Image 1 (cartoon, rainbow, N blue to C red):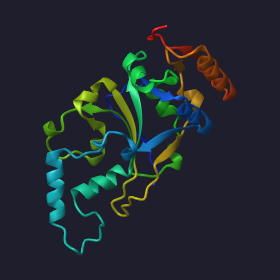
Image 2 (cartoon, rainbow, N blue to C red; image 1 turned 180 degrees about the horizontal axis):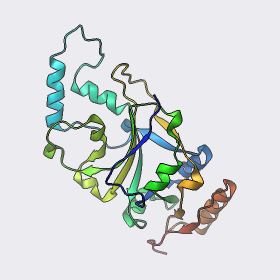
Image 3 (cartoon, rainbow, N blue to C red; image 1 turned 120 degrees about the horizontal axis):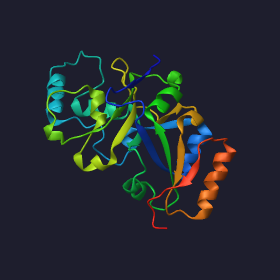
Image 4 (cartoon, rainbow, N blue to C red; image 1 turned 180 degrees about the vertical axis):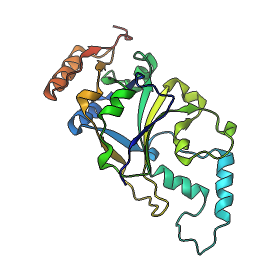
Length: 241
């Protein structure tokens, strides 16, 4: 069934968002005219989508009540979580008015990195989810919270918008696609999905790493010219040069 973008009420249209990436990901985005939504288990953080402990116990108890006649292949809470992780696809963004030095340090270690500037409104107006199928497509800020402080049972999509407090510097906003089907659950899912996007409507500005070489700035200008990108290109300001 086709899905439509849901935007959390806490996100304002004018909220500025950044995505920091290496050259290969930048070129791929322009070449494909799409945002890459990566499967949650391809991220380095092994806690992606983890059920809070109280929630896990409730789900585990529910599965204990099922008998052999139940047609679902899901065995228990851990198995259910594995299904969800393999059916959740995410694009990560940084919420900030300006570029961020810490994000450059993390995502631009070799100096050959790019940051694109957009907004919640730009994303909403320039993505085309008509080719995707699933349960939901949500744009929402991540909540940073200790897992043992989360009580009750969350909607399972919400588990992918919870991260441990030591990640709070990321100020992350996620675009999350959920393809889990309770009627036909499957773990045989792709490593990601392409979300078509109108690139010139999406990007307001392109920054290159503050400490990149002049040749890299020239390369980015050449690439944006080749793909007819209208957004201005400039060097970031937080470098040592």
